[in-house]
Image: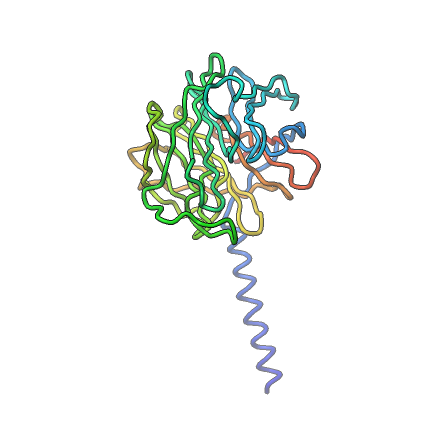
Length: 293
């Protein structure tokens, strides 16, 4: 009888796990890799992506030079600008995480905060006409009462790696290791004063957000993220604007790229996107064009 019970128990577990696997596989749609471009190792930690005058712009993650790198569709560096040489400000790459631009300014998110201990989080404003620095917007989180130590790394929500422009605001989205949610914060892009941020909305994305882009004409917000087993995702909010934040649902697509750390995204149109990935032991960083059906 014991043997029969064991067999019965095994069958029940098999059914449960089979159903769970099936539900997991059906939970997300799948994106398609349409093109891959090898990028130079000088941008090994490409962490943001923007397009200005039909040229791609990126930058490295923490610890690198405070430089912008310009490259073409072949992945060739066409120019680089060290921002500290064009500024009266002290410019450091503390932890640059994303980049966005309008007709007057490039905005660089020095908002990486893995350990939750930074008191110098800021957005760097760079003029598009001559790439000189026009100040920094320092930010703090209204509800952050504790600044953590370096070790062990705490699970907190005061890290932000996605930056985009919407209406007259700069928006950032948090990378929340405590519960895999993301909080949306809004920043006045015209002011150089320190701003205290309060979450406008929280989305249960069940992953860690690493990059974002918004296209006002399409009303489309596109994010990239990953989970604890390093699966990579594309998350799309359609008909997105500041008036209907609480009503927004999203579509989530698994990106079929292994051994990657996707850090940035740029919208091409409703169904195609550029993304960049750091070198994760594969020899070079990459830019991919991905699509959805």
